[in-house]
Amino acid sequence: KQEVTQIPAALSVPEGENLVLNCSFTDSAIYNLQWFRQDPGKGLTSLLLIQSSQREQTSGRLNASLDKSSGRSTLYIAASQPGDSATYLCAVRGQNFVFGPGTRLSVLP
Amino acid sequence: KAGVTQTPRYLIKTRGQQVTLSCSPISGHRSVSWYQQTPGQGLQFLFEYFSETQRNKGNFPGRFSGRQFSNSRSEMNVSTLELGDSALYLCASSLGGDQYEQYFGPGTRLTVT
View (spheres, rainbow over the protein chains, first blue to last red):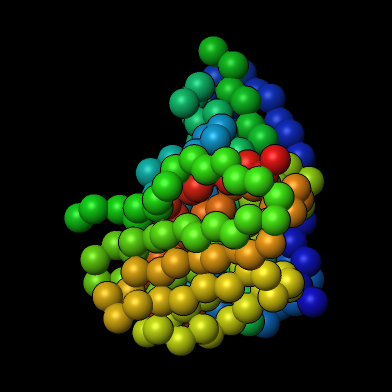
């Protein structure tokens, strides 16, 4: 059974810092991994999708990497801004979709 | 292109009743997945439909069911509601197939009293 964990559970940083969020999964038999952000009480916004054959994806200030053999993905956020404050979730697509518990990020002005 | 829409946005029901939630996917998307989100359990996969067929199912009791119509719109039904069914129910659509990105709707907030 696939299990997904995310560390840290919460993170508070001053504006302008670069930061890394981590996602680990136990079963490497996945099709892809997707990163999302969720604002309080809202739905999920897709950030990046990495296929199992890819190593990384970039979108603006975001860069996500995938190491399928070790069951790890990282989301790198450059030059963080207060508007980046949200909960970040990773999800792996194997037989089913399994989400991690999320990392709650606060970027302080 | 319009995003994923869910109706209703908020719902209050009494224990023992049943409820039906609706999801309209992005135009051209053939796959719809449903999730339950609670503070204690996080986001949990309910089921996925593709071209009117249930493709995958999560670990939820039979009270939770769904269907998909020929226009890809999907409904989710929960019968004999329990207090623990109070949650944010999210649906997501994708083009279909295992490699495509999921796009989520705003969710339906269900409160069971």
